[in-house]
Image (cartoon, rainbow, N blue to C red):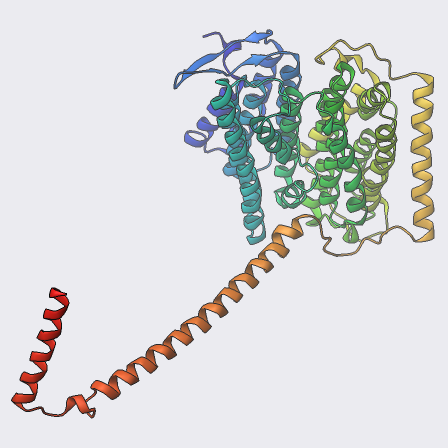
Length: 566
């Protein structure tokens, strides 16, 4: 079989098997983890459009390599993200994390090229099972419980997907993974499954719960695949579904307020990730070629600059042991290179001109304006200003430039710096030469981001957002960076519902106890009555004469005979 036609996921699975069985040397394992994504990237780049690998599975035709421009752009960025993440994790000695990363990446890429729902389901669950080990690898009691919650939610998403697949196959006889209308039970179930993994509102808090609980390097890997796979799945099957426009708009808004009051900087970035997913979901809901190009390009750029931000904060966590804003500050003095990379990531996510976010987010916003969604456009503008506040300013400011924490850690390890430098270069390169990205998008791009009106309007928005942040800080209105627990929707299933269940259990226990006590009293009373009648001191216990006993026997037999005869 030609190498190009082999499913890309097989490359990662084979590497995971080799790592598990043969490689005991940490350096060799790290080299393999660097080389495998490069090999996969070359393979994906050379893939031709079409179906390249089909297999029969219980009389079902599975398509393991359905290649078109949409799947190809996601396959490319997933391979690139795997390379950068593994380079960042070069120093990791934990073989569990390394194998989990390979299986996780392979499953995500396999799902991107899956042409049917059965294949998608297996890869979908593969990402859930493999990724949880990046959380458990922290080996603390808290990470264990967080991983269990994460696994429960991710597996539930897969179960709902399987239910939708079963209903679709029963009603239509098809397992095709293609565009759907949200008009049947099967499509609704599949939509909910994708929505859980995409962190829809009220289904989102697994993201803020799990990503900050993972290892320093595991968080970088997690941020690249799961949610972007859900974005791809929605773009593949529900493009143009209008409800996604409003779901996405809500997703861009509510994380802003949580991010502003959050003290843990990795949780801030998790909320920011949720916010950026909202832009992509809006683009899918609009569903035009411009909007879908914007979604694909923004997912591409977002993986890079969000990884860069997680890398820089992760480097600080690696050197200081904390990612709490209240415990950091002044680190630019000893970690200037990490600070520079963090600033580049902040500029990219804030959509400054000449950075990647500027040339991708604008596609989505222009698509909403073109399709006459003025309210949604205003929401996205407000959300863009909010992104600058909590990710563009808060992350670098409180990590590297706020009050002097007195910490003087060493600069990040060389492998982390190289990974951050490469990612920083790509963020700038795509911002300066956007056609490089536009040329691989699903549809032809006739769009020029660097027009005078667009650049000026974006700079005005950014300058006013910077001014607002400065005024709020000077007047003391900005939420203080203090150690606190901020309640989110997970409070419902982590605290409220368990407390309700505990009350119900206690109430049932009380009812059970009172019922059992009453029955015991009744039985005890009955025993006493029988004892009084038939006990050793009762009348029936005295000695009867033979004549009396014969008389009683005669009476009993006479009664029995009367019953039988009459």
